[in-house]
Image (cartoon, rainbow, N blue to C red):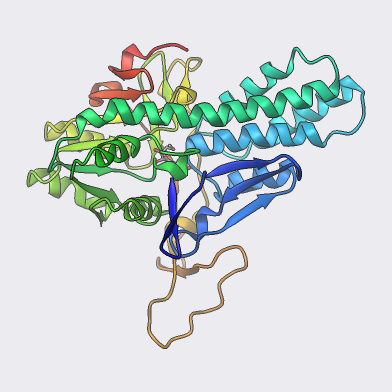
Length: 370
Ligand code: MRU
């Protein structure tokens, strides 16, 4: 999507690969919306760290990053010994896979890269196949998000007020996004509507990333605190909910997504508001039999106990930001308390009106197998 740089739109993808330097290029999402910056990860361990530290986040974006990271690790291998090469690739896979557990896209993406490497007879051939497969994954991610936009746009009627949670926008994918793709497609067709962005504590992806994306595109929106949705629904001020997903179980139709999604689904059902989930095929998990088996990431307590932001006090110099982030961290909670921080929850299929896939909109239990 386009980023306004000095007032001019410049096209950017969230994740790309620099083959000459064997490096992954990422938009530094922890700096947004205050600063737009691209970072490169010089080796697969740095790529895995970028996923774990949420420089790049969102299921599709970490899927593409993982695919590139695996190709990066494979391409860094020197020599012709295929056994040692296989071991190096396996190590790379494991390190990247351990970075974040809930989204299935990285696992699906790396499995695809490994399968594509198999026909290669030499190390060199396999290295080339790995990169081609990673590029193919990223490219397909873009096309699938565009298709989600085409199918989902028909749900968006002029004047609607739409709630979204967290960021399932282009920053969470390679481009376009899942939950936001129908919004972008409808907006491009001249439809006018209003979006409520859930703030999405503790990392505030809605307040920072989704709001920034919508502002860049000139789409009418407001940020609400996570607890405001019930009130707005009760007053008839929300017509539709669209969220993304980190893992959808093909067998059951259960949807793992950012913590708070389940709450919004319960509220939407209570108020008879359609609740849609948008996702590409890489988010489908056909192995797990129950949502209870989905690994739910538990993140650090400091995300709950405080917040990151920039100082807006005129004339006051903010404390020096840490080198890793322009924002300052402010402790909000009682100093002697600690916190519990599950990053995701699981919404059962009976609360979901439909899943917007690249092949069309379907019921959660009728997902197309690809
Ligand atoms: O922790 P994050 O920011 O990586 O989580 C991302 C989400 O849960 C998103 O909201 C999204 O719906 C899934 S990613 C497309």
